[in-house]
Image (cartoon, rainbow, N blue to C red; front, side):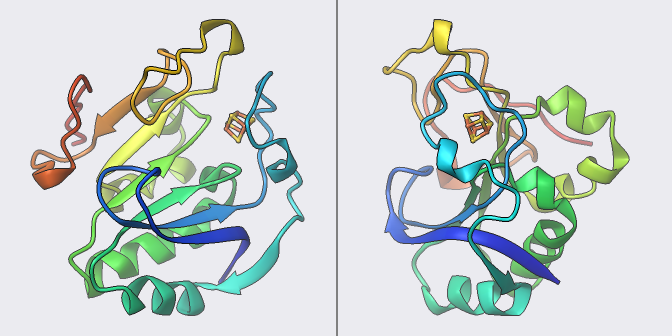
Length: 167
Ligand code: SF4
């Protein structure tokens, strides 16, 4: 299984708490006005990388946790689910995932929701330019939420965030 990847950042501190390996995928159909990353929209952008290749990159950094961003990883949910599942089976790393879908939209679609058991934190919702707030942690507008999908956020807790326990 393959993921179209635009970029991989190593030991970034801008994509969630602590050091993270951030996988930026290609493809987003939300087309939010004022998107910081419109070059990521093309579904056929970037380069195809196998789940095995990406897993090796993630595992090669023993100190970094993992971030999925884009683009929107939920447009490649099958391959990202496989990657997330294997990260959880083969490492102790946490996974933060950014998406332009809302949590409620994802829950209503079993095809999208299948990745949720393997994610630790979901940062959800489209960017709304009219509500832009540069003081927000890890988000561009206040409609976006940092959602803890499981009961133990460990050291990924960020002040001022909401928690939703996924069942
Ligand atoms: S969801 Fe993110 S990447 Fe997609 S258009 Fe909106 S801000 Fe840009």
